[in-house]
Length: 225
Image (cartoon, rainbow, N blue to C red; front, side, top):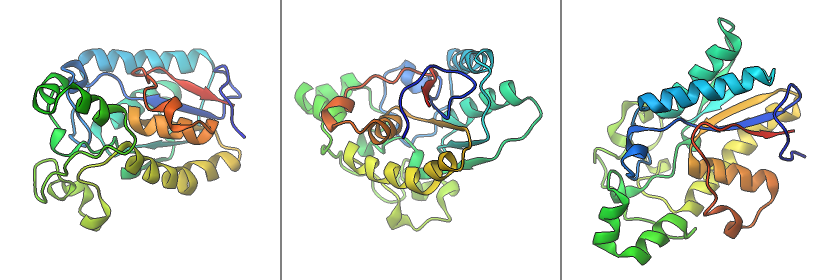
């Protein structure tokens, strides 16, 4: 139904990774830690907004994760394109980045030193490699964040493999995003590297091996028509 396409007024879907976050800059596993954009990340979001506006693209509805770095990127883009005109935004935890469990906050160098370079690679690229979950009430457990208080704790992850995250992303695609596209609406999705790779896999019908190491640059729009 959808295929990669040049960005333009007829584009049906734009996927956008958030701008650089403070932990992107220090090469840390971020996951569900609610880390804000760097000043460079804000500039990247602004540049993305200008690219979309210059391509004369507008959107009818938006979707974003519940994490600040994605939401801030979304609002920079939305306000740049649509000024004071509100657009419906749906936030959903299923679009959050993969939960890295006890790796959250560690640098890649620290993980390599503690677990070895092979295990670091497995954590990053093996679809089934699941880090140990953080305990309940841990600072990076969803139970410690009031934004997730309306959800049953057992429904939220405390440590995920790439495959685990892909399951929830597929549900968000089916429940939220695809119906809007089928209704003829133009859609913007602001999310994260892992979750956007899962969406790309769904849309393009790719195998796991084709997407696990795929680079998703910060704040560079990916267009589908």
